[in-house]
Image (cartoon, rainbow, N blue to C red):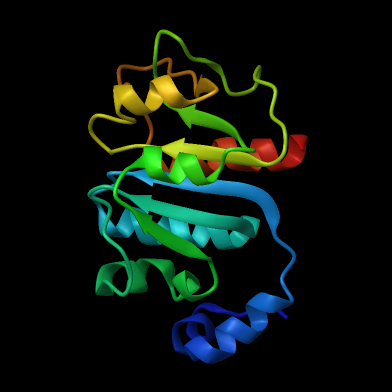
Length: 173
């Protein structure tokens, strides 16, 4: 049974843990590197729940629950998405040795997200709202993909980018 926003906000954390056991998860991981805006983090929890991803890694300067803004923006989905804090994205990647690791970033080395080959299990890295994924993290990724931009703006909001790429990936896998 799907929960509406009011139910998600008020569900007890113990009940959430029980519901989690019956949820079939996608073999997809999100690695969030230095996401500063807590509303973006909350929105990424909503996206992660919508896709039933396996786990989300909150890295570096990324705020973690139970931050009130994350709780509000996530409408309670932070209780349903397994997550873990890591000091760096590199630490998160070290736990995902069997994963295909793909950074979503505007880069000269990037290919269009629609042209990339994806395989399970998959980790998607999303970076800071201003400067993106760190160069040292990009070097550790198996590939870099980007969303083509035809206007003056260099990039989309991190939630929008994550949604475009991750829904595309889920439909491809």
